[in-house]
Image (cartoon, rainbow, N blue to C red; front, side, top):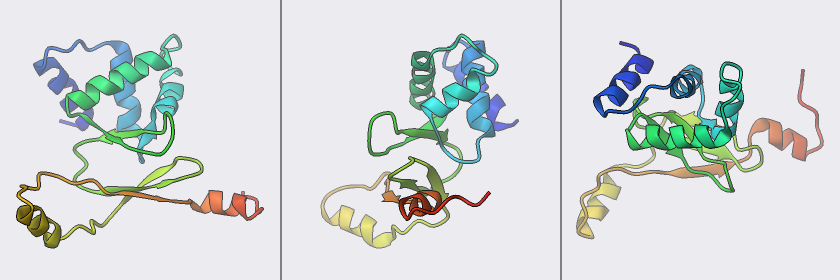
Length: 150
């Protein structure tokens, strides 16, 4: 079963309605190679579902996060949160502070020392999140006054 079908099965088990708009949101995120912002998801969903509002996309994203299907990736600024599948394995992201693009990192810099420190402080470490911010190649070029190569 592919992840889209898994997500639909999860929603059905939880008693959630499977609307065409909800399915379209899932299809867009399933096809994405990188995390996507709500506005970008909305723009792609509108190709099939012309009448869908941005508010409807946000409501669907909230439900999909609550059901454990999608993960929100925090960011600086209003409406900058991106979303991706929660089943893509543990990883972190780096986000461009100018354009908001987020990319997945292939390493996790958190090691056993963090878990040991948490235990010393009386905590059981359940999960962690690491937010990295920088400037992507394209925005670095723009800031330096260079054009993107075509």
